[in-house]
Length: 287
Image (cartoon, rainbow, N blue to C red; front, top):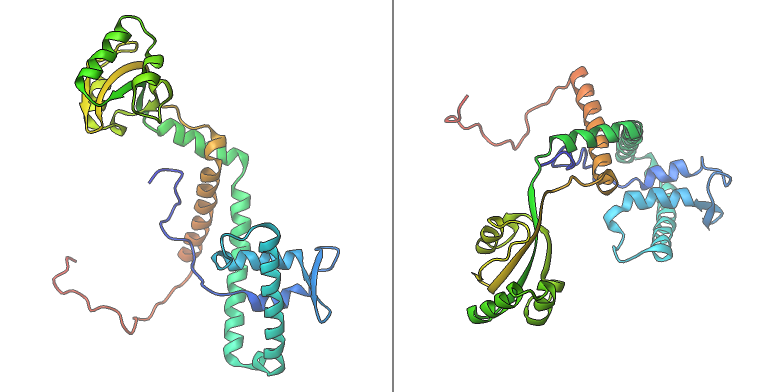
C-alpha cells in the first residue's frame, strides 16, 4: 500500500443509516434565498440543497446509469415520497415513539460527525499540505528502470530472420514492423515504455540485455518470434501532482480525520462490555 492509498482498508465509519428524518427536520431552516426550490409537497419546499444532501446519503442507492436531469429527478421523487410517508408517520404519532427518538438521536450524532470530519478534512487539504505529502512520496519512491522498444512479431523463426536481415541492411524498422508484424496493437512495432517484469520472461530478459539502438537476434516467446530494437532507457518518472492530486487529497483528508478520532479516543473513557456471542478464547493461543 503506497502513500496515495487510503490510510485504512475500511472507511472511518459504516453507519448504514438513512438521514431522511434529519433532512425533514433541517429542510425548514433553508430559506429560498439560500437554495433554489425544485419541488413542493403540499406547499413544503424541496430545494437544491435538499437534493444534494439526499443524493450524498443515498450514495449507491441511485442507479449508476442515471446522470444529470434523470438522476436529479430520481432523487426528487425519493424526497417527495419520503416527505409524504414521514408526514403520515407523524400523523400516526410515530414521532412520539421511543424507538423513533433513539433513531433520531443516532442520526443526529452521525450528521454531526460527518459535518465535523468534513471540516477537518477541508482544513487539512491545503495546497501546502498536498505539496508536502506529494514531495515526500516523490522523494521516497524508488526509481524503477524502464525501457522503450519496438518489435516485429512473426510466426516462424525463418520469417524473423528475414525481418532481421532487412532491418540490418538499413530498412526502417518501423516500416518493416508495419509490413510484417502480426501485433496489431503496436504501430511501427512501438511498445512504449515498460519495465522488464511487465513482459513475458524471454522478451524481458532479451530486451534488458540490450543497449539503445541495438537490434536482437530472433527471440521466441509464447506469442511467436520477435525481433527487438531497443530505443531508449530511463528511470520511470514520478507522476506529476496534477495526475495524482485526487489520491493525495484523499490521503491527507483521511489522515487528518483518523488523527482526530484517535485523539478523541485517547482522551475519552471508553468501557466495553463483553459481546454476548463473542468467540471463546483459545487456551492454546500465545499470550
